[in-house]
Amino acid sequence: MPSTLPALLLSGGAVIDLDGSLLIQLAIFFVAFELLRRLVFRPMIALFDAREAAIDGAKREARSLETEAEEKLKAFETEMKKVRAEAAADRDSIRQDAQRLERELLAKARVEADGMLGDATAKMQSDAAAIRADMKKTVPALAGQIAEKLLGRKAA
Image (tube, rainbow, N blue to C red; front, side):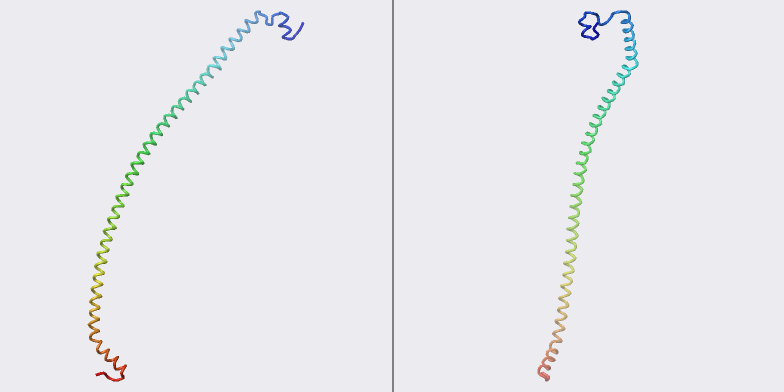
């Protein structure tokens, strides 16, 4: 009797015997299937579903946080524009105040300098007049002394 599978198929004999052991095997299969379904498959499917729900929830939360962050960034940028505009206005105001103060100080310094220059000019003119008057008194005596030295005698 051939023992190989093709030989058995060609011989016309039955490969599977249908007897009472088939019912026992089917019962064992269904009991094992039900036990595995209750103890392994359902908890695993529940675990997968829970993990999927957690992932979906985390994705939704990440999207909402991203949207919130974008809104906060836009609000921050808007506020920064506003603050920059205020700072520029303050800077311009301070610059204008500084320029006005500079003009005032320069005008005051010019007035003081003009006053000091006028005082100095008046003093120099009065000193020059006093020196000229003194020279008019001393020039004839000095001229006489120079003439005596040059001539070697007293001038008449």
